[in-house]
Image 1 (cartoon, each protein chain N blue to C red):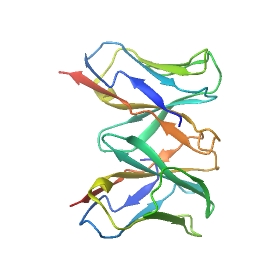
Image 2 (tube, rainbow over the protein chains, first blue to last red):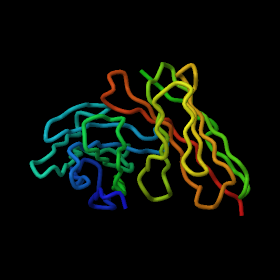
Image 3 (cartoon, one colour):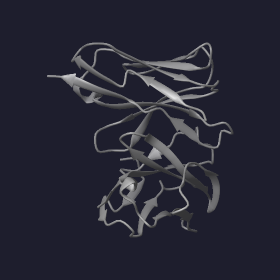
Image 4 (cartoon, rainbow over the protein chains, first blue to last red):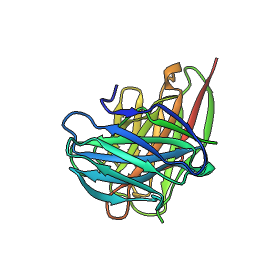
Length: 114
Length: 111
């Protein structure tokens, strides 16, 4: 158990809908990273937050947004969903803001868009 | 953009065999990371390398930071069933603000 929790574990929805994925980092960790994992693209970095502020951005679509709250949990919002958004979404946390520090990954949320 | 190429993409081996996999980069890295993802779980860091030529072990796993700083290698000795999973190499992006993952080497162990 990494100490990082993600909810829900599975999500099935329809095209055009909007969903919210939630992540709670390990106790004491200040940084949260979001990744998308699909079969053909591997693990793609989406966005990082550190202590409530956006720190780094990767290949995140404009339809996706995220935030980190004062209690340090984070939410990833995916809107106008398309079939191609079906993937595993992971969050990871570190104490500091360096991406090369050990990232502790949650168990993931599997999103299926029908 | 930066890319990491891992090979092989998948491996089928017998229990007890040694395994070798590698990762090459289109640019120089100052850190190499190896993560493993068990089926149905998130990746876990196995080994971190910070210096060209560095050789680091974690139990039966040994990883090396290539001298050119554009490659890294991971070896697993005497494989066991729990070694099954996907092994990812990773390294920092251009501004060290993110890490880039390779597409992984999927390890299968034949019964």
